[in-house]
Every structure is written in C-alpha cells, then in structure tokens.
Image (cartoon, rainbow, N blue to C red):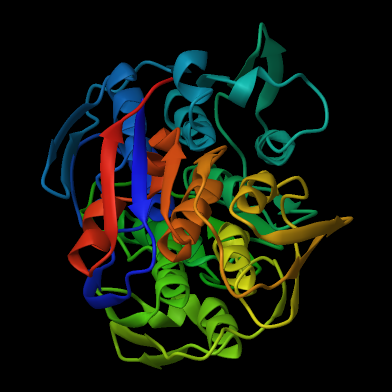
Length: 420
C-alpha cells in the first residue's frame, strides 16, 4: 500500500495547475445515460473516482475510452439498470445513476452506499425526490429499486441543501412529463455546471444557479460535448499548501469566483492572495499565520471539504482558532492524526478549538478519508523532520498527482510502497 514521505521545511515557488473538478465530472458522466449516443469530455481529472464511475457505466453497457484528461463515451447500448454494491460501496457518487436510469429505462436497481440500512440516511432525499416524481421505490436486499412507467413533474422542496439529491432529481425531472418545481436546491458550481449541460442536451430548466429551479420535462435529449470546470476544492487546498510551507505560488487554470470563501479565509489568516481571471497569486511572508474562526456552510459559504486543510493551517497560527462543522458533524477523523504531529486541538461539540503553535514535528500518520489525507500532507510540508502519510489511496480519489504538483514547486515529497 503506497505512502507519501515528506521532508518538511521547504518553501514553495512556481506554478501549480488546477485539474478539472471531480465533483463536476461524476454527475455529467451519469447524465450521459439520459440520451443514447456519443460524448466527448475534456479537462477530466485523472482520479480513482472518475475511473470507478467509468467502470460502472461500462457495466451498464456504455463504452468509455480514457485518454489524457479526456473521456470518449457512447451510451447507445447502455441498457442494463443495476449498479452493484461492489462499486457503490467505494464511491457514494455512484448513486447519481438512479435518476437517469429510471428516467430512461423506467427502472433502476442501485445499491445503498456502504450497505446502510433502511431509515434516516443521506440517500433519503434522493428517494423522496424520486417518489415525488411518481416512482415506486422499494428496498430489496440492500438495493434501492425504483420503477416508473413515466415520471411525472411535481413540486419538491429539499429540507436541507443537498448537492447529490439536487443533481439526481434534476436529471430525473428533465425527462418527466409536465413541470417540476424544485425548491431549496443546492447552488454549488458543480450543480450549475450539470444544469447547463442538461440544457445544452435539450432540457428546459429555469432558475439555474438559484435555490429554486423550474424544470419543464421534454420527450428526449441529445448528446453534447463538455469541458469540466476547475476544481475549487483543489484550488483551496493549494492555498493552504502555501500557508503551511511558505513561499509564492501561482495557481493556474482555476476559477477564483468559485473559491471566494476560501480565499477570504486565507486572507484573514495572513496570506496575500491576488486573483486574476483564471489564476491566483498566493504569497506567505515570514510572519506567522493568524488565528481564524470559520463555520462550514453550503455554497457559497465556507466548504466542508476545506475544513481539514484549514485546520492544518490553524495548527500553526498565532492564537486560538475555532472551526465549526455543520455539514458532516462527524468529519473530524483527522484531529487525532494532526495531534500526533504536535497540533493542539480540543473538541467542543461540532467545533474544533485549535491552539496554534510555532511548529509541528514529523511523525508517521494514517489517512482516514480523502480530505483528512490531504490535511496530513499539508501538515507534513511544515513539520520538522520526515513525515510518512500512510493509506494514501484516499488521496487518489480526489487529488491528481499531488506529489508531482508539489514537487514541481519545491516540496520534498515522494510516493513509496509501504506496508499494509
């Protein structure tokens, strides 16, 4: 099992190119099931999650050919309607195929993510939304089975903002008969990207980019090509990398308008951030970072996916920082590992209280999930000595060649084979 070995204390200097957005790519791949035919996607990140979704689509009957940051797809013969547990358990975004399969094939059989039991859970909103559109939904041996001869437009209000449920219901509603009124939709850039893609396919969607969307169902859609938007979470992560290691980095091929909350938080902590049309110039002087108080919120608020990277910065800040998690309340598995590196963190409910200190010290640490993994990598950039980050297969789900990108700007980081 691979690990990253990081020798801390080396400032960063140069350019880092941002990859295409994983969270924008996955729903677009699922959306190809809505209209049989050929698609060409560019600026596709080379990530494990993208490969997993591509494999799932092949199981459903699609042809998928991957080249350098490009996917060629043909869903003409995608007529199989079951998403197996073996794939869905490894990536919750596989659940995105539910809406398109019901809309096109009239039936879907999709495993519950992680084999979770019937009852309150994140996929409840997907299921309730499908039922609102007229689908009959049952549970059969750990699979959600949804059937509808023809989905029908309906009004549905999301009780909480949910990116996944918004995307799934949007994809189902575009082929439903009649008009659907979707309220309290997620407004993340990835959802806007999906809605624009569906519109180019022939969907009739009003209110794109707002909390309320009106979808007038159409009889059919047609394939179109698309370029993936830049990854705003990767952008914020490399902001934090400069904060940890110091130096001056130009973050290129990004979309600063999608990263406003993380840019503002980084500036409050003392980073100099200049934004251009598609780049950020980030610098950190010799002064210590300043403490910060942030609360995760749905977009355009501070993103939950950057909670862990900013906690790494807060561990070195001057003063006491408070980071409150409101999206995923148990998303603090990185705290114990950061403390192995010398961070001083205590928990107050859903708030992490971080007493900043001047330095961290290297230690072997273990990844527990995607964002926790990158948090430990960032901490390793600043820690005195050599840090080993184990179980980095989590990283490969969401960060394309992170060790190569950081090495090119001066970090001492290598990937090595490690023990289980």
